[in-house]
Image (cartoon, rainbow, N blue to C red; front, side, top):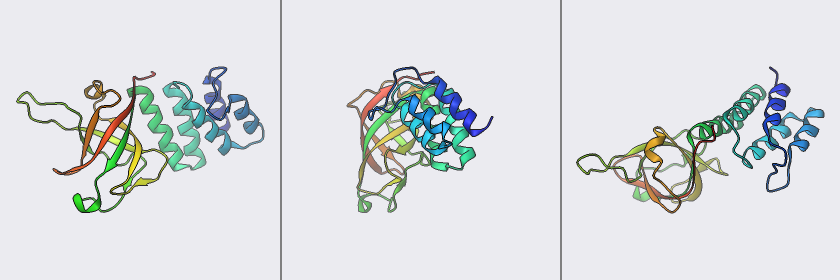
Length: 193
């Protein structure tokens, strides 16, 4: 299937009446597709994907289209959203400790590369803290500098271990034995698949 076919297939999955906060609808996507504006159509479809619980297939089509067009960050974002459709969504407000208080001196890469450990309240049988792993995506930015704050998305290695979290819960990020930051859970949604 070619790029246009994948974008068309994804757009056919968007329910009638779905619109973004800016009132973008799937009819606008079709207008851009008719004029071979594939990049704009892809961007609009990514936005529409956030306006409803898009299934994994929607994100898979967008991921393949972004890959064929050579848009690496868009491809990774669509891959991430497909994983969220399968595993669930966890969003949090993360505050990193300043550079002098932890080993990290450089920004955290924002596109889901980092897989830190988290204290999310799970305990071993002996009562000791048990850390869980989740990939981290910084929303609206390419990275997150030490001491900075940003909304993030978390993709757990073992999603079932994170199911107890709810908005308002506080969790702690670890890259070493010293805490690297704290986060407050903003949103938890079950899988859409």
